[in-house]
Length: 358
Image (cartoon, rainbow, N blue to C red; front, side, top):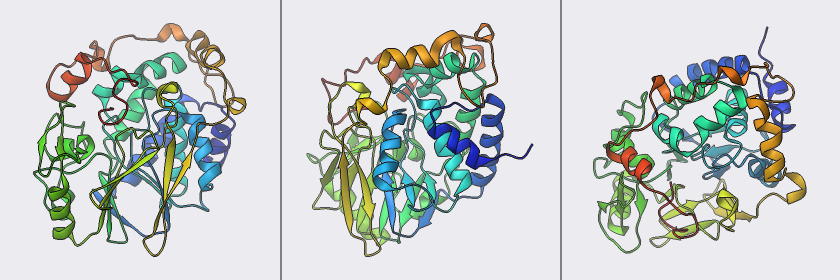
């Protein structure tokens, strides 16, 4: 049967899960598409840039209402599509379908949560198990994560990445030669791109309190932009209570697109519209209205009942097939490097709401 992407997208917009077999086919086709993309994808404005979503599917729908639907609007998503929110499956499903349907109008950058180790700790693995009764959908998507690009450059002037810079990377050409088709390493330039953060209190690189990547200051940003002939760095990765943050004399911006993060932080969110003349406009928004999303109790009852998905395109997998072990039959624990930091640290979104979110 021919894959009908328009029907899949319509179904997801109607809040219906896709069947496991459909997700498998979509992921395989998307991997073939992504394999041809460079580690540095060059695009032209106008484009609307979206920061972390973290499984907040109803807020993603709000983004499309505000920014416009594909293909009328070009979108660049900066990673962290999954974990923490209740709808990571729906979020990844619709973004993958849109990338496959409109490959030149939708760009997907890899974030630090597009990782097997992290998603076993912060919710995506468990969500897949509950909604499909097995880990297969998790495997399909996490295999796809290995193919996502690491960065995007807009009009040769704006460098876009999920996290930040690396002491091992001085030029764009050094990013192009990274072997990205693998799990995110615990350290090294690939890890730095998805984990690092700017620090307005510093000038150079320093060890990050996240346990992975680095913090970096204004001199690092100035040098990188100068050596690469660019004028701005655009990234996500850090919660901003106002929805965005601009640092270092307008040389670096953070865009955050998950309002009321974790359904409790009370923050605003934003998308960044980059115009054809290089102008940048943050479009700030609040969480989707309560009338347009199910309550927490309704969401868990409707989507987690019996461990199987409900609605069109479901395949009726029985929850008794579930395997509660981690990937490869393990328990999902990994105490090495950055992943050890993740597993050993309990983070309260309220206590540390600005800088060090995963």
